[in-house]
Image (cartoon, rainbow, N blue to C red):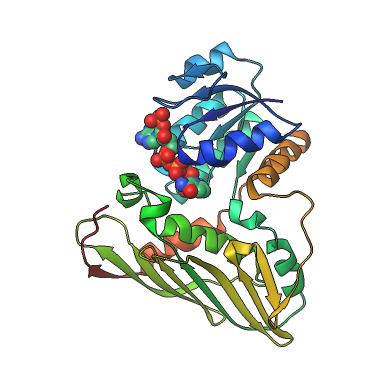
Length: 303
Ligand code: NAP
């Protein structure tokens, strides 16, 4: 199936282009980006022009930051194309619901991807927890923004979500593996004095569930979920790549290896079967944190 990538930047180059190239399902037939392009692939700077020139491109995958994404997705859906959305699927819940309505009316598929849910042991963690009684959950998602988003000022602009840009990955794992839903009770959000979005956040949910997100961690990075149950403690580490139960290795290998190869396999399946896959629960928790969170001012942040 022919596919186009829109927004050729860090994640498109790191993950989308190699995953499409390695898949028998897909052919990268065009790109649309103001400055970026992919060697040997027809490149456009205008989406309408690309869609008109390539009626045979069935799927458009959106890789730009969340704020500009809605307008690109709306146009692709209006042109009858199936659409795949990088995480977070939009800058607001309302625009995600609007896209879902538009896709349903146009009869095209829409996929809100959550790449961290396809970490190698995340499904195994969900399966292990399914029949357990959860007593406590703690998420630690601490990384270095200078390493993962060098110079990307959009993460600190309104709609960029700050530390929730990686934190929403943790919430996507949480909402996949916990057997019962939780909701936010309170939050503390740390805003650098010179920025519009938080650089750290501490969240308290129902079900004795807590999360600690921080973008100031240098040295080893931490992407862990710990779940205490009536049958032992599950520990997912390295963003879901490894899993232990009571400190012993656990969890089978997944059928498709790699987060993005798995997302593209799911998109091929979704197009084949029809319909939308728009689980917005991770974005809902982020919206709740911005609504309920206490704002704390911390040191200014410079790259
Ligand atoms: P990025 O490199 O800053 O942006 C991707 C591309 O989007 C840019 O190169 C730019 O291409 C285009 N773009 C930026 N602002 C735009 C605007 N206002 N209007 C139209 N196009 C615009 O960002 P990224 O790191 O790839 O992240 C993009 C998305 O992927 C985010 O939602 C992020 O959460 C997600 N993601 C990122 C990572 C990561 O490690 N960085 C990992 C997983 C998921 P042109 O200038 O050529 O138009």
